[in-house]
Length: 225
Image 1 (cartoon, rainbow, N blue to C red):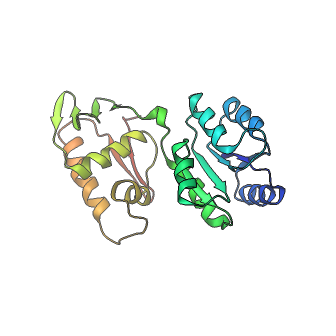
Image 2: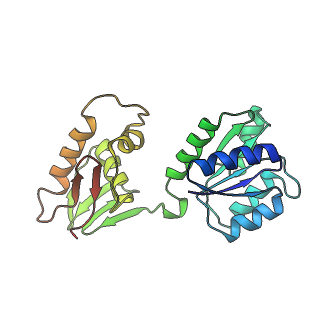
Image 3: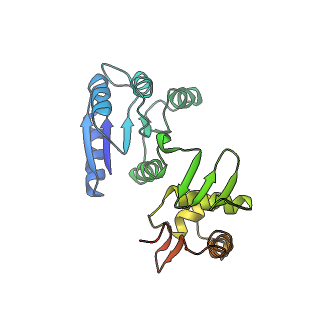
């Protein structure tokens, strides 16, 4: 990942940047809000981490300006201001998450990873299409080759996740988190069962399979290559 860190405390900035680099990420560090806003609007980042109390342009104003400019990069506030009102203010300004100092680097990394997994807002379409398969998110309707497909709520969500990740492998763990909100392995066959039901509705009545099992990895939805 490429991460922008806007932090004016040299010890905190060095600690975070070093940890991110050791994890294999690229981290650009700036200490001033105006410079941070310019960098965040000029370059592309997976996540922006910003302190609220920085010189020049404060963190809240920076994020508000970033959103006003149409940039939807995930933003994590990393700050000593930890009151309820402070958190609400940060989130309402356009922040996606809020972590108070002092903090554990492991938690910071987990929150950054969680933000990076979120699909960007600009990619949130109301109709998803893969080959002749169509999913209308507003009407909660699925069709393939013009034929209606009746899906249960979890089947619909499962198909949505797979279609949003067209051509990419989606692991069992990712599906447990995004469809069932499990952040642990329940040791059940819930994923496999729902994949089987989905395949029976989306693939079996048609000539060309779209839902593929990737051995020892997960599942992928895509047209034949």
